[in-house]
Image (cartoon, rainbow, N blue to C red; front, side, top):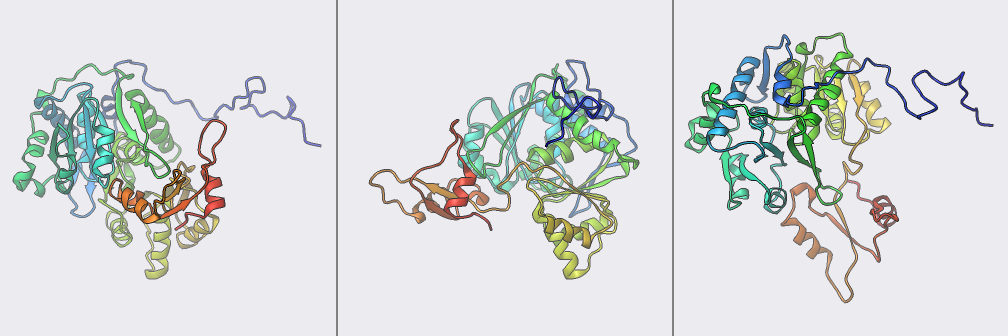
Amino acid sequence: MAETLTQKSTPSWYSTNTGIYSALNTPRTLPTNPTMDLVTFLFSHSHGGETALVDASSGLSISYQELQELVMSMASGLQSIGVSKGHLVLLLLPNTLLLPVILLGALSVGAVVTAMNPLSSREEIKKNVGHGNSVLAFAFLENMKKIDGFGFQVIAVPDNHAGGFVSSDFNASFKLLYCDPRASLRPEIRQTDTAAILYSSGTSGASKGVVLTHANLIAMVELFVRFEASQYDREPCENVYLAAIPMFHVYGMSLLAIGLLSLGSKVVVMNKFGVEEAVNVIDTFKVTHFPVVPPILTALTQAKAAGGCELKSLIQVSSGAAPLSRKIIHEFLDAFPHVDLIQVIAEDEEAGEIPVAFIVRAPGSAISSSEIIEYTAKRVTPYKKVRKVVFVQSIPRTPAGKILKRVLKNHNGGSKL
């Protein structure tokens, strides 16, 4: 017979009346000032950090003092070209030293930031920003053509914040970044004002936009980043994080481009992940913390087996986006027993799989798999391109109309790599 939960056996942190579990940790205090914006909140915290951001390939860096000045200069520059509260600013950028500067500068003037994968197709970009109050976009030179003709200015961003400005292609970036920081007129920004619109990856359906207010991002910094740091004896300003996961996604943005900058931690920025380069960067910059996704974790384990890399400076690796198998966990801990491995609860169950299209042909249609693959390939980001087509009689749905993806996979062929 199942044991009955009695008053005597009920934990103090659980209420049988309300069914609510109460955390045992000391509650975190969020700002009550209704006009506290994210950037002001971020820079209001004192810390002992010196270097804020470092470019992994060139070694160029931005100190915390320079960071605040650059953000204020960017805010002044944006206001000088007409960007103001409520305007939408698109960041079509990979990880780069300047992404946090542009992001925080835009938020400082009350603009709404939306960030997208730079591999996104023209059609995907147009769908997300081809409406509303879009006035400005930032992109690398190779992606400028994707946004041509959208009706707003596109500013080319160099790979780094120093040598890249020698080209005339980056005159606009230079002018924005080196405006007089004292010329910025800070508008009143309320916590309830929209700060960002971020989109889901779209690996298992249409990409969906999520509106985040300044209050949302402040809470994310306090409850997600600063709270976790408070659980350790080590001073956060002593930590060195490797930014290889994309800052244009909410996890990378909230942690690496925003939250850690309130703690004084050093963030080493990789443009894109490569296992050999990552190993060298970890050793060179004495990286202590590495947020990853499962394929990166596996790549590090394989690198240890192939070349004997030790990653002696690493203290913590946190893995998110998809669940880790017991095999992957044990192999990593056997390879690096000195590293504390944390698994973040998965948000994307489709990670590590290939895109598969389940198609119900219209009556009389003879459309082929190759036609569907060719059609979608021209309209989506490379990682979303359909690799396999399965024709079915119907699409299974819940009573509420939600597609039962697991039923499709189990009964009509898998989608594993």
